[in-house]
Length: 270
Image 1: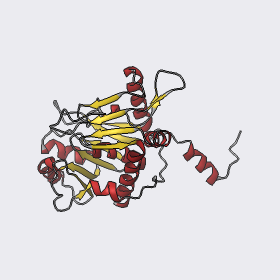
Image 2: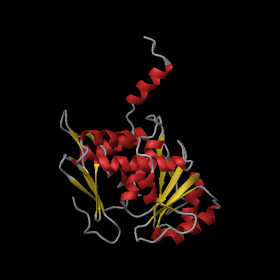
Image 3: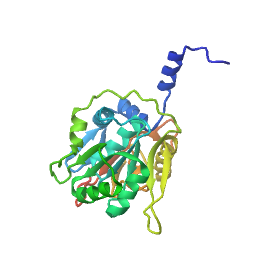
């Protein structure tokens, strides 16, 4: 039967039915606004607070020129900002490029150039390596974000990601993201040759989230300690902020991940 809706109505229906990575967190926040979502050091956020932080960050990125399909590189140890950026980029349809913080400047520069990154976010302690990588890649301009995990002030040309989260528009970005749209570009370590990139769609990422929840037998009361580096494909899909089906029929599972700051393995709690 042909679709009899007007184009504007059909578009509104399609957006309401949209079920992508960025939507999962929003729906969890609607159902469990006051449930604890994340603990990072002394910082805590409920699902409602985390959802708003993601919207603010996404709108700040959009205001700085990033749009659907663009790449944003991220070089940082585990942090609340890392988690916010993972979902903020998903809401915009921006492709997140998590970079191994242990590779050298030359390899990082290759990833920045090969991925076509239009922006980069770095942790303050990793700034020297990132600056050399940017020079090696010949990148100029673009979005530059600074995560101050050691409380160092941003240097010239860098903006505090905390201000993006604090000052951005709290409304959800109006961006249509499809199941097959790429949202993440993961790179191999490059131990035997140049790092190789693997593009992951929204649907494939949701499948990873679901498989982690189902195979892990997780329940709504579980607390997940994020001990592995979040740049890695073995850890990032386990940052289970959104709800996803668990093995029990008619039940869904919101989890509380605890992001462990570098150098403080005992700080994760929930």
